[in-house]
Structures are given as structure tokens and as C-alpha cells.
Image (cartoon, rainbow, N blue to C red):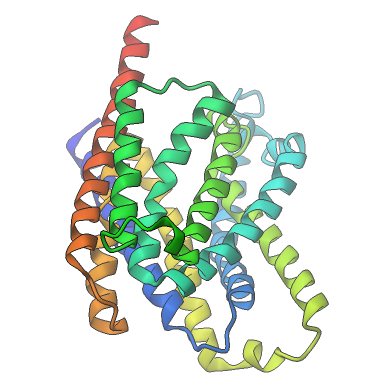
Length: 320
């Protein structure tokens, strides 16, 4: 890897960090009459629109590669989608539900607490990587996963550790992160085999999310909220969130082209700090000393966990 590629990876990672930090702010700044269901529906539609041109460009470029290539994504663009159709359908349902829960979590927990709880993705990544992909988990990773949970609990309970008063939004966010990481664990082998590209996956996922959420939303609320969909003012928030979420994914996958996943994960780890600063200034949320301590513990735990995972990967390569 040359220096320019490394710098590109860092810049893409920093872009993802900024967009992740802003997502809770955009979600909780939307007009109160826009419920989480409608907001999820409209934002995934915009995300699909963002990735549609990229999807077409990738399909066009794939035609220029020799048909005898072993890279399924390149020589037969839709092969992987057909082969993994059941997985694609599952992803559509999984992320449709998770997208609603994502905004419900921010609504009830607040931007700061929900962004901190969102970091449990690291724990579920280890858990489902072990259960589904048979990846190894070290004692160090288990210890620092427990420490990460301690940091989240310290922050969201404001130091009381009263689990009976655990914010429902935090619980919803933890459920959301578990759904995300189940899906990521299932798709990892498919991406590694290059049967489906990341752009294909994100576009098809959001397209299915939009179809599922739109059809079910109008089943429950036929036309009573049509004014919320047609309102130009509301579309400002739909577009902002769609772009923040969609471009974040674009930056994330591009950062992984130039730097390893452990480095990229460490770069985005401080996103709760950015969220906390903006939420304090613009949403009037209170950033306490316990939030600060919890954030420090969470970031430190993430760094150790991903570094350990990277080292295990290097050891496996050396031993193979």
C-alpha cells in the first residue's frame, strides 16, 4: 500500500465518521409529526436513488471485463443476486425493520445515549462472527467487550447502574445493532467470494427496504399522512438523512478499499463525541461527566478489540 492510497482510506474514514456523527442530529431534528416508520420509508428511498447511478456504472464497467473471469460480479453482474436471492430477501426484511428501530431509538434515547449504545455493534460483530462465520474470539476481546458494555451502561444510566430504569431507546438501539450484525455476518462470505459487490448489496437492500416499508406503510395508513410525504419542507429532512446514511456507506466501503477494517473501525469510533457536541449545542441535550467517562471507556475498548482482531488475522496469515 502506498502513502496516497493510505491517505485516501483515512479521508474516506473521516468522512464516514462525520456523517455517522450527524445522523442522530438529523433524525431528532425532523418535525415531530414524522414518525419513525415514515422517516425510515422515505430515507431508504433516497438511499436507493443515491446508489442507483453507482449500480448502473458498475454494471456497465463489468461488461468490459472478459467473460471467462473467475470474478462473478464482473463477468456476470446479476449472477450473485440470483444465487443468493433468499439472503437478499432476508436482508430486505431485516434492514426494513432495523431502519424503523434505528429512528425509534434516537427518538426515545436521545442523540447522545443512542449514539453510545450504537457502539455495541462491535460486540455483536464478534458474537455473530463466531456463531455464523466461526471466527475466533480471544479472551482479551471478551474482557474488553464486557468493559465496553460497562461504559455504555455507565453513560446511559448517568452512573446509577439502575437497569430497571434503562432507557427503552437504548434497548431498541442495542436490538437494532444486533439485527445489523446478523445481516453483516451472513453477507460477509458472499462479499468475500465476490458473488455480490458492496454497491450491488447496498442498492438492492435499500430498494427492497423501500418496497417493503412503502407497501406496509400505506397498508396501515392508506392516505391519511400523504401530506407529510408531499410536503417540500419535510423532504429536506428525508434528503439530508438519506444522503448522510447513504454517503456514509459509500465512504465506509471506499475506506476499506485502501485501509484495513481495524484501522477504519478505529477512525469512526469517536463518532459519539461529535454527536454529543452537536446535540448539546443544537438539541439542548446535556452531556454529563458520565457520558464523557463512558465515551472514553467505549472508544478505548473498541481500539483494543479491533486491534486484537487484526492481530489474530495477521497471525492466521503467517500460520497458513
